[in-house]
Image 1 (tube, rainbow, N blue to C red):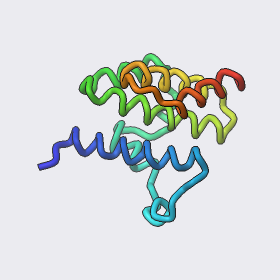
Image 2: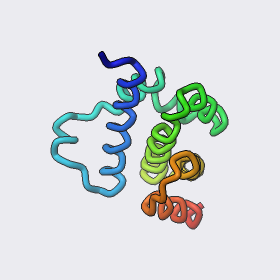
Image 3: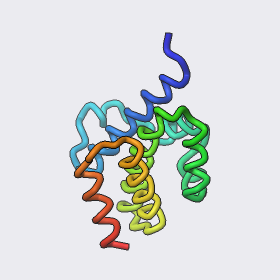
Image 4: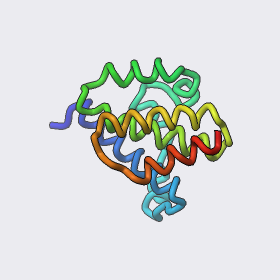
Length: 129
């Protein structure tokens, strides 16, 4: 039986992968066919939409993540980094890019993974802001 936590984690990973493909400008046909309902995923994961999430401070978002199980934090931070990076780059919004940098840094700290694409995005954000 799949629990709510497992389902949410699966949604987070699905959104993370979809955003990665969009960031790399390589969306798959299957992604387009699924018509990934971004706002629906946001509501399923956070219980509110992106506009509400974006209006929160970095500290408030980190507190939301801290309410989840510690082993899941890295998945949340990676997804949040991708989310704010994608939105920030698309809308040329430095506030979103700053949030992306913070969440990417937290992802690297909590995961212990050396992720060169993430490091490159952090450096790109630092140069652009």
